Length: 272
Picture 1 (tube, rainbow, N blue to C red):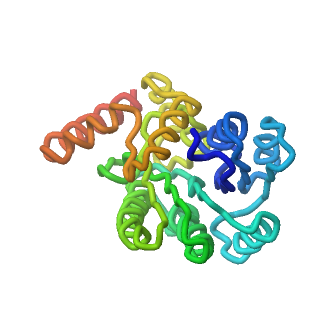
Picture 2 (cartoon, rainbow, N blue to C red):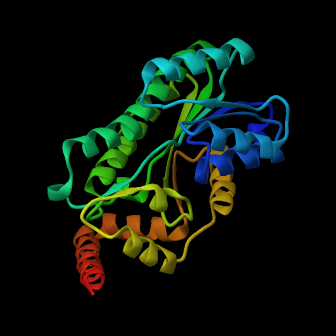
């Protein structure tokens, strides 16, 4: 964890799940100064209070609001004069077949999951160019590498982050800026409980989710941070993510067929 020592680290979506775990592990186990950002200020403030170090800060901010996000970033620079690491982690989930979604569902996903990452990167990248160093970590998802049925709008947003991160990594490298893409799956965060479900039972989804073996956010983040420090550009955790991605690249038709069968089975169970 020496890589993170004395770094100024900004984390979006810091009120819960992966973002919260990033703040707490870095704040407690390194000398990094952590700035937590979340739309829910109370949750964000609680994250910082649990670290119990004076220099840590919490900001309420909707990352889809560029002007507000810009004001927060400027306040951070005014105090600390730099940002070394940005975790673009804020995101929301919407599940349901495309036929059941309205246009506002699309806009909500695009505003938070895509624009939020664009806003954070645009604001911080310009400063990192002046610093001639920095590191941007974008939290995508396995659904950004493999198409998942019934979460098409969410999968679309994460595919966008994957493409953006891979392309930016090439551009940024010549300026001394690192870019890492992280694709988690089966991590026990609140996103399943906080997602919007259209044309499907939230209770049934949560029931199925409880049956899936999951990695805790703390364990996931600990392993992720080690890989970030080692300079990994693409991080897939847990191991099942890497296996499924490898299989999809090797034989996509097999994986897609299994996903289709799984979706059909789940819908039959939901009806019963």
